[in-house]
Image (tube, rainbow, N blue to C red; front, side):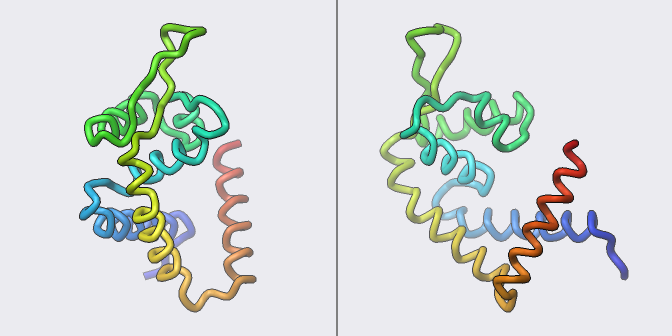
Length: 141
């Protein structure tokens, strides 16, 4: 069966998501939740992180982002703190538990990345990333 680019991207994304979710299941977190948690951890040192930042970074709808953040709150990985300048805004703050899980989550991601790129040369990887980036820009613009 011949697959077009979209079918291959969809198949790889689905397989990657399943593999990541299976690896992270023992930690009680999904792949999407781990990516959002990682984003908050990586950016909170630079200043407050808000829900809108997550929406933009991952190109997610408001309702999808709300659901992910509620789950991260229930799992005590983040908490929302009010902002002095605007009572409507809440910054997303990682908890100690998020910092504890960070190393394990990153190790899982590195394992999967290594598995996925096994046998792929650095030049092939660079070209692949360039091509995917161009495809994303084509669809986003």
